[in-house]
Image (cartoon, rainbow, N blue to C red; front, side):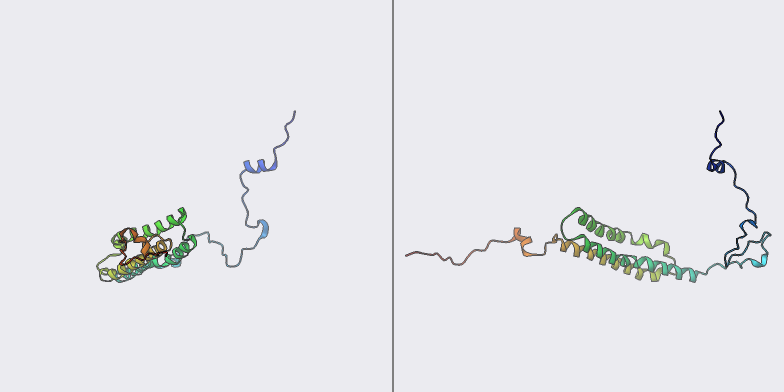
Length: 182
């Protein structure tokens, strides 16, 4: 019995790809494409070597990056506010987890303030970095205030008189009136 020939896809899979010739298909190059030259590049086509940045330029770049880092908590505030609004004021696992994360992230950021800005601290940036750290701390405090607003909206803050009834003293009446029937 003769075996049938293998399908064309199996033949194509096992055979190495055919080399494409430059004239195959006669497809023109797209606009803006140029053929790479086959020879070595000439020395004149290379871009000149970049000079090393000065310490002033490096310090300026470090200050810009530290400002971006200090304002990052402020950029997250609108997203957090919308998420807190959408999670509702009822006590559910989702809203409790959201409030927990809203408190946890700024508190950990506040405790790690110096470690966050340590890589940007040099002799040239030290006098400016304290103000950037203050802005960073203020932005994290605003995030904490958002968490306090949410906890208050959920009714978990003791802000009404009825929350403090355990410490209320019973009033002693000065007079009593009794209804008497004749």
